[in-house]
Image (cartoon, rainbow, N blue to C red):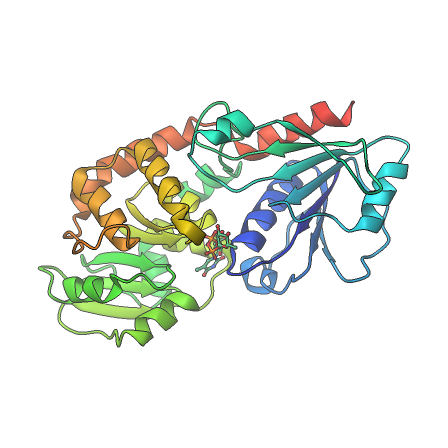
Length: 347
Ligand code: TRH
């Protein structure tokens, strides 16, 4: 099928990251995709290699006047341009119209996945959009897992990757840091500096590196800090696979952290009225972590003002492996999206 995926970059990297990943995976399965982005600039570092079957369309104002494909996906309710919607309405065969939603483990996801949403006004009045929710149960759209992921993982050489980034695989623990500005960051740095074993902390470029600098973080004691450049999404996976534990944030890196099969600590994207607390709680109910890991999540997200528990990577590893098994048993998002859209496109 021919897909139009619409993406507005609100802030951070997640909107671009999720949309690119979905587009690239559909392309890898032989679909043709136009990815409309109001700001395609993050793709320069996130996906410099491009992807077969995927063309990026700058979503300018006015928008390019293009004939809609068979499936239109608006990511996160971003509303395609009116002129394009008018073309959808005039098309001899109505495109399937999906709204790809944010990831959550909350109960409303199962209830809402696949629901129709009648379009009440505008040129496509009378059309029906459908909600498509990623999620953590068999009755959701599941999680995206690329078809080549297992083979890439099997051929991956951690020692060589670390060495390329100037880090010796010398028995020290290796952690990655991708975060916003967690209030407990100074505590973490202190804990690692005073730890019983050496830690290499690989700090991702952008907000995480700025947050470390803002709290005066530097190498010392048992802590070795390393600042990374912006990595492509593929290289970011390699980073996650090289580490004993990953600090992740937002939604996309969080899923990649789960799929890496080693423990991760998630900083959830903060929302108004602390709506993200319920989201974090729902995920923790899915993960069933040991009590100290749970307490670590809550302190890292500022939900409790408790001090950070000690990092205990070996004790947290079984929960991460269990989570990986559970994640791999979930529906696969690109497969589900294809099935769902093919069903709707025939209507
Ligand atoms: O950047 P984020 O905080 O994005 C957020 C969330 O998605 C949030 O839910 C959303 O509402 C908000 O944006 C607008 O975190 P996330 O989702 O993990 O996206 C990061 C992307 O960046 C992911 O695709 C991985 C990628 N990445 C790289 O490709 N290279 C890198 O070096 C790093 C650190 C990340």
